[in-house]
Length: 176
Image (cartoon, rainbow, N blue to C red):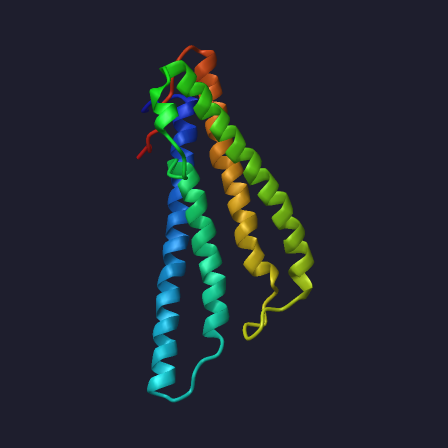
């Protein structure tokens, strides 16, 4: 039987799989978005009957594409940042700065999650026009993103903190 590796490696592998699920569903939403706009053009110019639901579906899909993409950006550490100062610091101070950044991102995700949950509950009785589904379906994208931000950044806080306590400096690369 093959040895599975350290717990940190297992966590990173699980987080990478979760990221790949986000990319899959974001990509699927993008394909559906393009297909529905193709149907819009076909309906408008060939059938002379514009499908009115396409705009509302497009707004819904864009919410999911954007929020899932933002969560993936947290996992891949591709969020905006000024790196000039960070890169000039010695490795131990850089590790502390990375830890603080991850902590702030996890806290932001937690605030986003709780605020979005309130919007989710509030919008359940309101229907999206043309689609006749609850407004909360659109807000669920923000709830999911907030939760994923907590998971991705929070796991990195844990892993960086654990490494720092052991006197190691942990760089994060995608585990395949």
